[in-house]
Image (tube, rainbow, N blue to C red; front, side):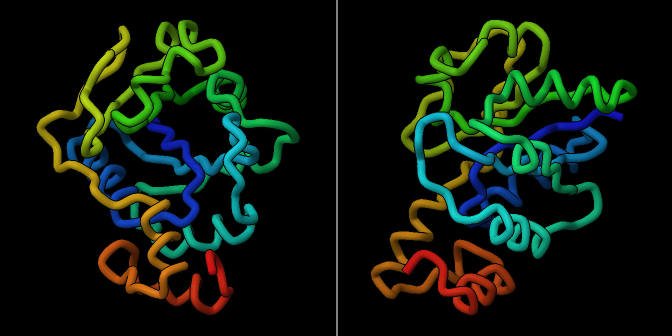
Length: 185
């Protein structure tokens, strides 16, 4: 099978994450999209518990979408190349690609083993507002003709801290979970 790994914090998962995954599935670019929540962010971004992020992701799953816990089950910082190589070894019958937003392109050359990454694995790059589709590295496919993702997890957390509504940014089940668990306040 062709699997697109969608790595990120998913802290929390928002409608933009769902749009990207659904678009890639609908266009038959891959057979499945696996959400890959990071354990420890390489750029020292603090994260909510893996349990909470998995629970929220489970609320947005639909056919063709799965969760891969590899990075949460691995000690240490999450590095994409290390993860992709390990998953390729664990699932030798699958072909893996990776999904990123255009907001990652400017600093992509700071990713661990980025040259090996793009040489060995295809990338899908979805547009984010204010972040151009450049520089595109070899083996990257720009999804420029797709809807731009305007939601962000940062915006969700900031709205919650200000006591504002997040209902247009996340599914109602995710919002209920956040409020029930008292996250981000």
